[in-house]
Amino acid sequence: MTQKTIGIVGLGSMGSGMAQTLLREGFEVVGTDVNKAQQQVARDLGVEVVPDIQTLCGKTNTLLLSLPMAKHVQTVIKGSGGIIEHAQIDTLIIDTSTSEPEVTRMLAAELTEQGHHLLDAPVSGGPSGAAAGTMVMVVGGEKHVLNRAQPYLNALSAKVVHLGPSGNGHVAKLINNLLCAAHLVTTAEAVALGKKAGLDPEMLIAGLNAGSGRSAVSEVNFPRWVLNEAFDSGFTMQLMRKDIRLAKNLMSEMGLELPMSEQVAAIWAQSEENLPDQDDFNCIVKNAGLEEK
Image 1: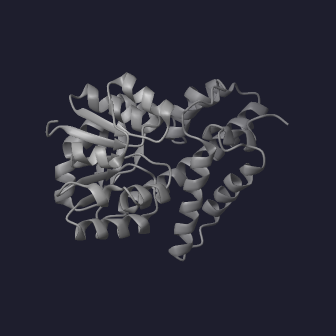
Image 2 (image 1 turned 30 degrees about the vertical axis):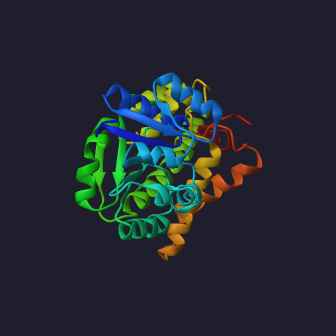
Image 3 (image 1 turned 120 degrees about the vertical axis):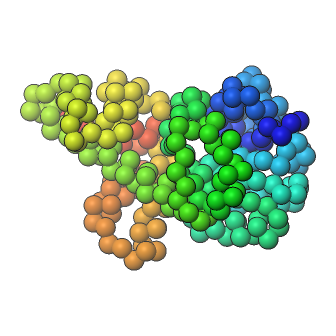
C-alpha cells in the first residue's frame, strides 16, 4: 500500500459514498464493516475489504470513521480489538460521524497521549454528496493535524471549515442539523399555507428560492425528495432524531432557553409515535401540515 492509502471503518451509504470518491481521486481504499451486504457493495466499488480493525490498521495509519453514534466511535477506537490496540505509530483518525462533542474531546486527549491524532470532521451533503465529493465538512482539531488530513478532506468535499479545537466540529454539526430540522418543519408549513391559499407547491418553492425565505431545505430537499414524494435521501428519521436529541442536550449543557429550538425538538420527538425509525428524515413534513387533513 502507498502513502495515499486510507482505511474506512463503516461502509454504509456515507462510508461507501466517500470510498467511491476517494477511489476516483486516486487513493487506495481499504475498509471494514460488520454488515455483509455493505461489504459487498464496497468490494464492487473497488474497496479492499478486510475482516477487522486489526487488519485495517496493518494497512495504513490514516483512518476514516463513518459510524452512526458516539458509542460506536468509542468502541471502534477504545474497545477490544479497536484502533488504540492495533494502530500504527502516529495514526490519524478522521471521524466523519455526527457524534457527541464531549466524547470527541475525551477521545482526542486519550489518542494524543498515545501518540495519535483525531479530527472531528462531520459532513453535510448526504450519500449523494459523499459519492460526488461535494460535501461540506466542519472540522475540530489542531491545525497541524488538519494540514495532514487536507488531501483527503479536499478530495471528499467542496468546502472545509476549521472551527478550532477538538469537539467544535461536532458542536457545529449538531447546530447545523437543528437548523435543518427546523427548516423542514417551517418550509412544510409554508407550503401547506400556500397550497391552502391556492398556490401550486412547486411554483411556490420556485418563488421562495428566488427570495429571502430560501434555505438548503427549500432548494434541495423539497424538489429532490419531498414534492415528488420520493423520500429516499438515505438519511433516516432515527439518525435525525438522535442528532436533535444531542442538540437539545447541548442547549441544556449551555444553560440556554431557546423556545423555538425547544419546539422543533418537541416536534421531532413526537414524530416517533407515527414515523418509524427507518423512514427517510424528510418524512417529518407529514407531521408538519403539508398533507391535507
